[in-house]
Structures are given as structure tokens and as C-alpha cells.
Image (cartoon, rainbow, N blue to C red; front, side, top):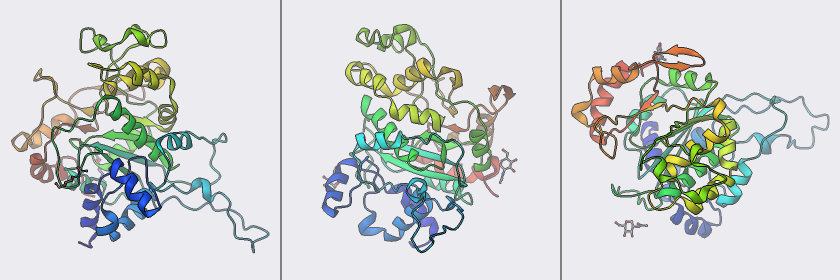
Amino acid sequence: MKNKKQNFRNLFNTPLNMINLLSFFFFFACGITCGITFTSYFNTFSVNLQVINDQILNPQPLSPPSLPPSPRSIIPRLGLNEHIKSINVEHDMSDEELLWRSSMVPKVKDLPFKIQPKVAFMFLTKGPVLLSPLWELFFKGHEGFYSIYVHSHPSYNNSKVDEKVDWGKVNMVEAEKRLLANALLDISNQRFVLLSEACIPLFNFSTIYTHLMNSNENFVETYDQPGPLGQGRYRPQMSPMIKLSQWRKGSQWFEMDRDLALEVVSDKTYFSIFQNYCKGSCYADEHYLPTFVNMKFKNRNSGRTLTWVDWSKGRAHPARFNRQDITKEFLKKLRSESSCEYNGKKTSICHLFARKFTPHALSRLLMFAPKVMQLNH
Ligand SMILES: *[C@@H]1O[C@H](CO)[C@@H](O)[C@H](O)[C@H]1NC(C)=O
Ligand SMILES: *[C@@H]1O[C@H](CO)[C@@H](O)[C@H](O)[C@H]1NC(C)=O
């Protein structure tokens, strides 16, 4: 259990439980709030905690600033440490404090020290990240270029996954904001990817990293859908702040840069309208970001998602893929199915991730993915 592989897997399986959390950390007088907690690690996985702290949450590559020696070098230098150290997820900020803290930006844009830009992979899950062995393979060898944040449903019990768990409408957006806010505390996180436990990568880490880092757009899906499932979810009370003509729908699984992430954690105006009026058959997770981004940050948004999904079955939920669905051809198809625009040029890479894959698909994914996705390095 002490080997790295095992630790990494444990990392995924140790989720965040907000409710336990509070009482737990009050008890130890060293709180975590913000729903991000790795529940059982204190008692069972002390080694694991190390891994979380050093590798993932306090990533190594944040190289200390190389500053000229202080003339008064007898005095221990505090310098910029406070501001460049990635803040551990074990902070004790309330949601409100966290959102405020994470919304701070330095006015001077050029950093006086070097950082290794990272992609923050944020998993919003019901329970554990069930496909973690695949993700483990994906991340292997790229330490320092990514951060991982997992936020599971508050009722998740570490052993039991309740398939019926419903994140709720506004709660899910709150969880997204919480994830973003935590990820923003680490200044080296430059791109932010929201994934579910049913997501898989379609390319190797280098390809995805490069694609995201070099993109001059964000990937928040937004579209206008007439009828009950789109415009029908608009509430007239949202006017005049949000008009029906501004109302949008889209997948909640996004990819965005730091600037947009900052805007999302800072927004209270539009979010409070959703908190107040997006009730009943109104689903904030499908409408808040698409509407907000469409209204305020449209010019730098591609309007499409990077996470492939199959709606072709025409059901209320997208298709799920099981063991027998996973073939080399299927995976290849997802990697180059259509043609998209990327930084103003045509590309065959429209999607970097795909959903929804069940845990039963894992063994065959592990069998084919290394070859098809060139995960081996
Ligand atoms: C977790 O599971 C145990 C055993 O199944 C149960 O007794 C306990 O109430 C659960 N806790 C929560 C917070 O759901
Ligand atoms: C990653 O995949 C790309 C193709 O998408 C390939 O050209 C590259 O060699 C792969 N990188 C590694 C490190 O395997």
C-alpha cells in the first residue's frame, strides 16, 4: 500500500465531504472547509496525505523566486512566499471567504519569478473517481504540469456510491465555484477543466496540455434552444438583468482560462438571480455558465465543449458506454470525428475528453487506450 501507484489511486478515492468536514476539522482545530476534503486520510493514509500535499496540491514545480540576496540577509526573508505558495486545500475558509480570497488578482501582469503553468483537473463526482486507473496512466510522468481537485457529493460515504445521488440544481454550481476557487489559489494553475467520474481523456497528456495552454479561447458550451428544455426553463423574474434572448443552455463540463475562472468565482450578481429564481424545472448547472458567459464574455468563448458526449439515442440522458462498446475503432473515431476551429484554424481535434463511461468499461479502456491515445511515453 505504500507504493506510489496505490497512493495515487487512494488519492482519487478519498473524496471531499463538506458536512463531515466541518465537524471533523473543528474537532482538530485545523479546518478545511470549502467542501474539499479527503475524508479518511488522517487516520488511514498518512503517506497519502504527503502525496496530496507535495505532489498534487502543493505542486513541486512552483520554483521559489530567485531573488537577489537581501543585503540584510540575517533577517529571514519573507518576500513573496505568502503570495506564490500554493495555498493548501486544507484551509479554513468559509465559502464566502474562499470566493473572496480566490478572486484577488495582481495588477502587475509579469511575474517577478518563474512558475510552471499547470492545468487544474477538477473532478465533480458522486463518489470516487471510478476510472482513476486510466487517469493515473494519463498523468504518469507529467508531475508538475497538473493539479487535481476532487469534489464529491456531500453525502458520499467513501465506500458506498449511490447512483441516485442528485447534486441538485444550484448546489452543483456552488460546487463548481468551490472547485474553481480552490484551484485559483494556486497561481500556477492556468487552465481549468471540469470533469465527471464518467469522463475519459481522448489524447495523451502532452497533447491535451498543449491544446489547452495554447488556446486563445475558452470552451464553455452555449446554445439557444427553443422549447421546454431550453427557453422554457427561463423565468420571467430574471428580467431585466437576464432577458430571454440572453438565456442559454450548455453542458456543464467546461474548460476555461484563469481570467474567466476569476470572473466566475467573482460573480454574485448573476448567480444570485439563479439562486433566487432558477427553481423547479430550471437547471442552473446547464444554464448559469452558458448564460453568464454568453452575456459577458462571449468574445473569448468558442461556444463549444471539449467533452464529447452521445445524445444520438434521443433519451433524457446521454448514452453510457460499457465494456462491449469499447473498441479501438470507437476510440479512434472519437479522437477525429469531425472538424472544428481552433485558434482560427481548422482542426480534426474537436474533443479532448469524452463521457459517459461506466466502470465496466475500464478494463478495455486500459487495454486499448495506451496504444490508441499514445499514453506510453
Ligand atoms: C456512512 O455509512 C455508514 C455505514 O453504511 C452509515 O452508518 C453512516 O450513517 C453513513 N454516513 C453518512 C454521512 O451517510
Ligand atoms: C502524444 O500523442 C501525440 C499524438 O496525439 C503524439 O504525437 C505524441 O508523440 C504523444 N506523446 C507522447 C509523450 O507519447
